[in-house]
Image: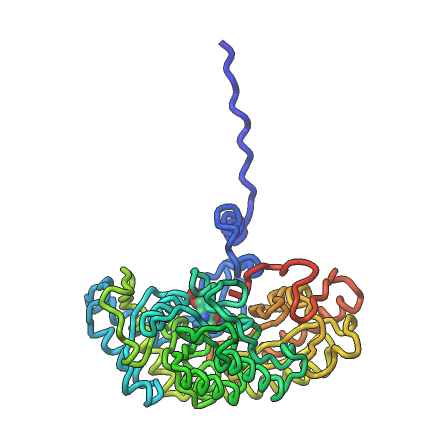
Amino acid sequence: MAVTQPPPVAAPPVDSAHEGILRRQALRESAARTYARSLPIVPVRARGLTIEGADGRRYLDCLSGAGSLALGHNHPVVLEAIRSVLDSGAPLHVLDLATPVKDAFTTELFRTLPRQLADRARVLFCGPAGTDAVEAALKLVRAATGRTGLLAFTGAYHGMTAGALEASGGAQDVRVTRLPFPYDYRCPFGIGGERGAEMCARLAENLLDDPKSGVQTPAGMILEPVQGEGGVIPAPDPWMRRMRELTATHGVPLIADEVQTGVGRTGTFWAMEHSGVVPDVLVLSKAIGGSLPLAVVVYRDDLDTWPPGTHAGTFRGNQLAMAAGAATLAYVRENGLAARAAELGDRMLRQLSGLATDQPCVGDVRGRGLMIGVELVDPEAGAADDALPGRGLPAVPEIAAAVQQECLSRGLIVELGGRHSSVVRLLPPLTITDEQADAVLDRLSEAITAVSRTAGAGQTGRQPQRGGSRAGLPNPVPGTSR
Ligand code: PMP
C-alpha cells in the first residue's frame, strides 16, 4: 500500500522573541488593531516617561496610553495603591456595591470638582471605557429631558460604540446636528481668529433660536474643551461661555467630554475651568483610573431622574482602578501638577513655534498644557490665498506618518491625530522633567528636519489633502489616533 507522505512542514522562521511576538500579533490579531501598526514595539518594562522594548530599545513615551498616564508608567504611588488593595484581602469584583476603596475614590473625585458641581453632584460608575461613559451620559440626558436630539461638533471624537460614534465627527446620524467647532488654522468660515469663533457661536445660537431652523431642542450638547483626536484644538474660552449661555437658555444639558483633557492635562484640573464654565454633565475616563480601566459620569442631581437599572453592567466596580485612580487624583492635586503642565506646556509650545518658523512643513503648532499638536502641511502645494489666517495649507498625512516613524527610530513615541491624520500629538505624563521635555523636543525637531529633507527631495510620495475634504490616499494608518 502506498503511503502518502505528509507535506514537509515548513521550518518556523528564526526570529528573536521580539520579532516572533510581533509576527504572531500580525497573524492573529484583528485587522481593526490601531496603534500596533505604526508602533511595532513589544513593551516589557516601563517607568515614568520611559518604555523598554523586548529588543532592549528604550523609548520616551509621549503617547502615554493615549493620554491615560497622568503620572507616567508605574508611578510608585499608583503601584502602592494597587498593592495595598491586593494585600488587604478585599474582594476584587463587587459589581456596583459600596466599598471603602470606592468611597475614597468618590471623595477624592468630588474634591477636585468645581464647587457648583461638587455640591450637587451624582456619580455613575459605568463600563470602564471612555465610550461607555459617553453612552451613559447620552442616555442620562435623553431620560432626563425626554428628548432625543443631540448637538455635537465637527472633528469631535467621543468613542467607538454606537451612540458615541454618532456623536463623533466621522459618523452621521439623523438625531445628531453637527455644528462647526472653532478651528483657527482651518476655520470653517475661512477667517480664523476671534471672528471665526464668533461665527461658529452665531450659527449654533441661530439654530436653537430660530423656531424654523429645522433643529428641535435637543437632549444635550456634547463637546470636548480641547479636541484631542480631532487634532489638538482648544476651544476658545469666550466661545465656550457662549455655548454655556446658549444651552442654559434653552434648557439643554451641556456635556463636557473630559475623557482626554481631565486630571491636569491642559493646565487646570479639568479643562472646563479655563473658561469658568460649569457643565451639567462631565464624562471621565483615561487618567482617572491611574492607568487601569475606569470611567464615570458626574452630573447635577436634578438630572438624576432615571429609574434604577436604566444603566446597568457587570464591570462597574474595578477596585484596583479606583485605588490607582484615587492615588493619581490626589497626587496631581497635592503636587500642583496641573499648574506644572500649564507652565511646561507653554514653554514647549514656544520652542515648537520656533520650529514652525524654521520648517515650512510645520503649518501650525497649538495646544493647552501638556496636550500639544504640530500640524504638518505641504508648503509647496499651497496657493497664495491658502496662507491667509484660517485657511490652512493642505494637510499631508504621509509627512506626519513619516515624522512618527523618524521619531520612533530616535526612541520617541508620538501619536497622530487630526482631521487628516496630519497632526503629530504629544501627550507626555505630567511628571515629565525639564530635561526629558528638552530631549522630546530635540528628537521631534530632528525627525521633522529629516522628513523635510526627504520631502524636499520629493521622496514621500505625498498626497496633499485640502482642508475640509479627504482627497488622495486614505490615512496611512487608519484609526491610529484613537
Ligand atoms: N472621548 C474622548 C474625548 C476621547 O479622547 C476618547 C478616546 N481617545 C474617548 C472619548 C473614548 O475613550 P475610549 O477609547 O476609552 O473608549
